[in-house]
Structures are given as C-alpha cells and as structure tokens.
Image (cartoon, rainbow, N blue to C red; front, side, top):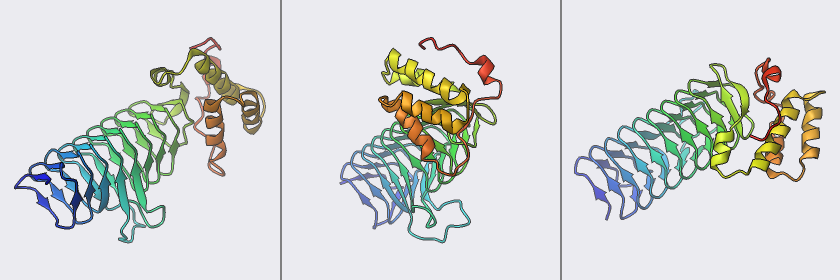
Length: 275
C-alpha cells in the first residue's frame, strides 16, 4: 500500500502503485496516475489528467497538470504525461494540452527540471532533456532529446529545438534551432555547434569534423540556402547525424528559416580544423 502522509489530500479516484511515497501536504486529484517508485517530497500539487512515470521524484511546491494558460482552452480533459526517472525540482510547473492541438503535453524519460522551470501546454519534451532554473517553454514547443536549456532561457511558442542543442542562459529563442546547435544571446542566434554536449555523448572526432563542415557549408557557403541544403544532403548522404539536420530543416515546411548565425559570423567562423 502506498505511503501517504496524514496531512496529504488524495482523491479516491487517483491511482498509484503500492510503493509510492506521498509526503506532507501534497494534493492529488481524481484523474492522476502515479507509477511505481515515485516519491513526492511535500506540498506537491498533482491535478488534471496527469500520469507520472515510474521512479520520478517531485520536490516541494511543484504544480503539475494544471489547465493550459491559453485563451483557446475550453475545459476539456486534456492530459499531461511525464516519463520515467524524471527529477522535478522545487516550484516547477507543467500544464496539460489544449483541444486545438494534440490534447497532451508530453515529457520524456530521465529529464531534469530545475527550480522554477515551466513546460507549457502541448509541448513535446524528449528524453534526457535538462531545463535549468527558471527556463520556460511556451505552448506547442518541441524539444529534442539530450538538449539543455540554461537558466532563464525562454522558448517562444511553436518553436522547435532539435536534438542535443545547448541554449545559453538568459536567451530568448524565437526561431527553430537545428539539431546539435548552440544558441546564445538575449535575442538568440546560432553560435556554432554544441561540441561539448556531443563529446559527452561519445561522438568521435571524425563525426564532429563532418558536422562542422556541413554547418559551414549550410550557413556560410555560396548560393541560396535551399541549394546549400541540397548540397549538404548529397555530400553527407551516409551520415545519420547530418541527415537528421537536413530532415529537421525540411520538415519545417512553410515555417520561417531556422535560427541563423549572427551577421558577422562568417568572418569569425573557425577554420575546418577538427574540434
């Protein structure tokens, strides 16, 4: 039987595994599902149609599954789904989806949400993502796996952030960020590739060298952008990482151009030496 502190308020309709721990003054709603091994420290609010993955730990004053902060929300039973082994720290907030989109906000496995971070309605957050203190995601944002958002970074609604992206702290992200990119600035620009993160993931020197060559061709080469994109796709046809970048850009459809480098970045761009 779950361990529930006497001061906690748990609705009879809530479902939870036998080994779940509910700390003091937590409030658990009727449509909440908490899977095995989860631990809620204290003062946690779980509401809405919310599912918390196994072994997830939630710190005090987190509020998860609250209604979307959207004027389009009509009160429907939209959902929040949180993956396994997440670490959700103090005062984190996550909203459910809206009827006008997929109706669900999804958070992947092994994610870490530091103090005060926020996941807006209809977001899709991949596995192994980290949001540092007070980083916030607007509605309908997509964050690729293994990405990191620095403290007080803010991602505009509908923006896509690719796999293994690093967003520097206090950065406003208003455009899509290609996979493996490094975004930085109050109004963020692309400042190269996230080589630190890629090394930590075990990327070989030759792989990083190819990524740099593709990046330079894509953003600093001759001709129109669509021509350079085709050239990169052809030259690096056998490289899965570069293919992911090409597909990410092409899948944007009629969306604006990906986040570009600063205007003077061509003059400052490093040589093609291996990183």
